[in-house]
Amino acid sequence: MNFYILNNDQATIDTLQDVIEADFDNVLIGVTNDPVKAYDDMLQLRVDIMLVSYELSGTTGISLIESLEKVHSNPRFIMTADKLTPAIKSAAYQAGCDFILVQPPNLQEAKHMIRFIATQVKLISRLRTIYDLSATSTSPYQLPQADQRQQFDQINRTLRFLGISAENGSKDIRRIIRLMVDQNIDFNEVDFERDLNLTEHQKKVVYQRIRRAIKVGIINLAAMCIDYPENDVLLEYANNLFEYQNVHIEIQRLKNAGGAQSKVSIQHFFDGLLQGARAD
Image (cartoon, rainbow, N blue to C red; front, side, top):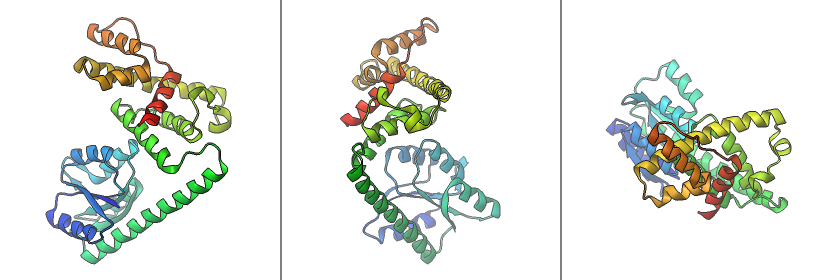
């Protein structure tokens, strides 16, 4: 079980760390008082349970949780707070916290809460494994759960790299690409009406949102290519997701503050996204 602590109070950190490390199945993979660093770490590390203080420098624990949920980083959350008002409790639970503890926490209470949440996480993980095993025995499409998760993790990393993981169309992208991963199909094989319950009009609206998100991605990638023209990773993204000539057009447009518009192909983007996930 992987834990991460974000807190300003050393006494609280010491208590939580002692409770976590008392169980040899647990790993404390990060401790910080910097919410910006914690946010970045959560996008890169696999955290099962985050212990976060309500009182943070420049923000609150609730705001941080809401920001993480927007980019689909969703560990279980236990919050600590110096003063637990009804308003803080209500907002914390609405944001997705499982439990809230007074800071510094009582040792026995912290031990009970952490053990309880960790047990829930383990049970849910086992149930998912059982479900995935039963699903693979009846479905010709379903990938093994570990492979499926690995591919989707890579897809999320790519969306974050392009700076579009929180764009309006990102939910549509994830919904479609998850179907492609589940069924191991290319974009032109997706049945939008049958599998996604989309009418032709709804499909057009979804395409518009996706196209706008992809446009943001190609602009961000072009800007990175200007800053790092010899970076092979950027060139690989350019070719796989957008076709390099389109990124080149966008680079020229950014340099000249105008000019021709790059074109984005939704099919090329999705197939490239899936191919990149399969390759890793």
